[in-house]
Length: 69
Image (spheres, rainbow, N blue to C red):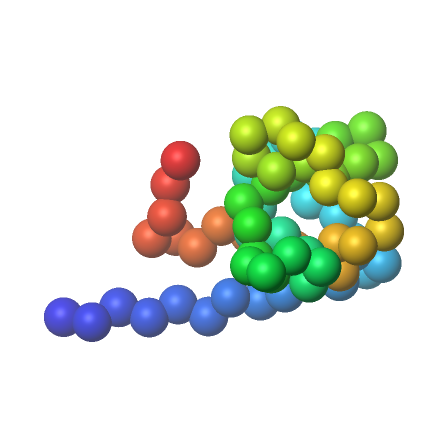
């Protein structure tokens, strides 16, 4: 059985995730534009705690149901 899931990207200007909730992050400045990360106190971070440059995160998505950390 094959399972598919649609990822819905939310622009950061529209809404932000709850602080410290792991999400998919659209960060087109890197070679790999999708990262695991979180938002906290007005800043974006990679899942391992490294800050992402301000203003470059364009959107985010909830984690797909098939993924867990």
